[in-house]
Length: 99
Image 1 (spheres, rainbow, N blue to C red):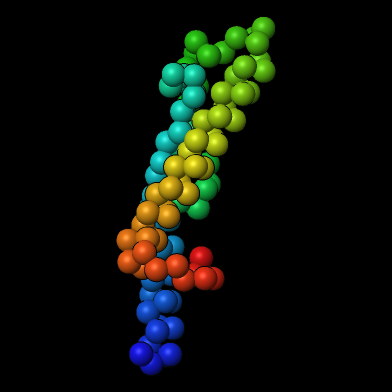
Image 2 (image 1 turned 135 degrees about the vertical axis):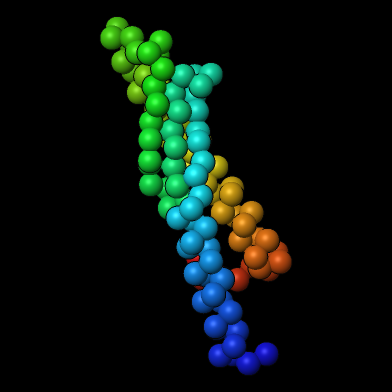
């Protein structure tokens, strides 16, 4: 295969992945759904929803831990989703430096 053609295909794949990242939305939750975090494929935090019952002025640390856990779960889901999409696009080939 022509190296220029291969490079063009890699650039197209990269553009497709960037588009998918921008469109992707995942939600992570903690505390049985009392705290939810929504994130896009670029790992920008888009929203945090906190159930009123999770708010206890005497236990702020628990709420902080739930927010961190929900955000971390959302980030993990982004990684899993993008890895799956990348694998599907490349047919399982590992292309160093693609992303």
